[in-house]
Amino acid sequence: MPIGNGKCQSFQGVTNFLFRKEIFDMAYVISDGCISCGSCAGQCPVSAISQGDTQFNIDPDTCIDCGSCAAQCPVSAISQG
Image 1 (cartoon, rainbow, N blue to C red):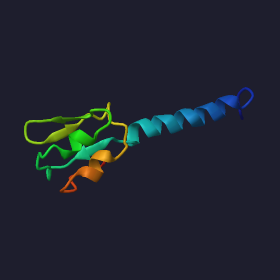
Image 2 (cartoon, helix red, strand yellow):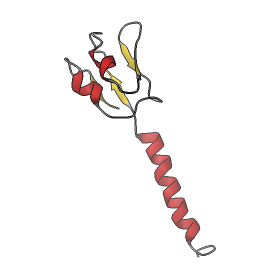
Image 3 (cartoon, rainbow, N blue to C red):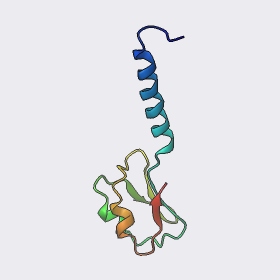
Image 4 (cartoon, one colour):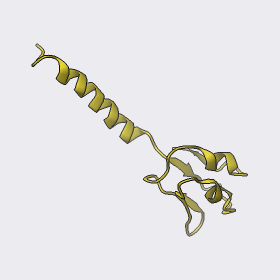
C-alpha cells in the first residue's frame, strides 16, 4: 500500500539511481602497463593525473571521465574503471 501521494516513491527511485551511479561509475584508471611517459598528464583538462612512485595515477575525485588521457596513451594503459 503506497504511503502519501506517491511522490516519495518517485523520489526514492531517483535517490537509488544517484546512489548506484556514485558507487559504480568509476574514473579512468591507469594499469600496470603504464610506461610513465607523461603524455596523459598533459592532456587532462582538470589536472587529475600526477606522477606516482612507479607510474602515473588518476585522482578519481578530480577526474571528469572525459577520456582525453586514454586517447593520448601510447600503450593503451588507461581505461574506464
